[in-house]
Image (cartoon, rainbow, N blue to C red):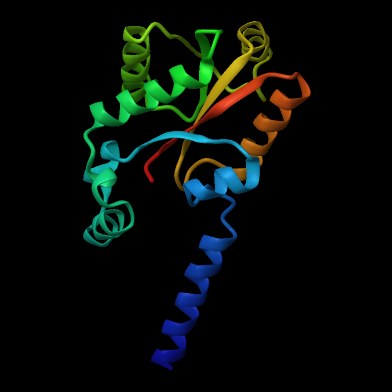
Length: 173
């Protein structure tokens, strides 16, 4: 009876994981939405990880999994600057951590890039109008919290209005 109970629990956990509808990996962004990942913020979630998660991140990402928050933000802003080309203004939206968003804004300003952060474009008309004026966007998505359906709707909305998607920033990989 105990073995069957453990087997059912494992099956339940796997099904819950597979059917959750939440972002599970950076690779899915490229495969499902054909957008680049401009960078990943891993350091901000170090304290929230268990030993197995820390081991997994170290094994999967090697040295890049051990960057400081400042290094991650610098790399993201450099990628954003390169992606912007002529228009040095970008709209930043999605799941946000205010602390991280502020660090990104500050670093981008040092590089001559203006970042306007706003609300989700699928739910707020003024956000969509502001994005349309700027013409390009970077989405912030959070691992295991951002929903595929919401991400899909954002991408479709941008494509309908010919708004350039520069890429996505992933938090908590």
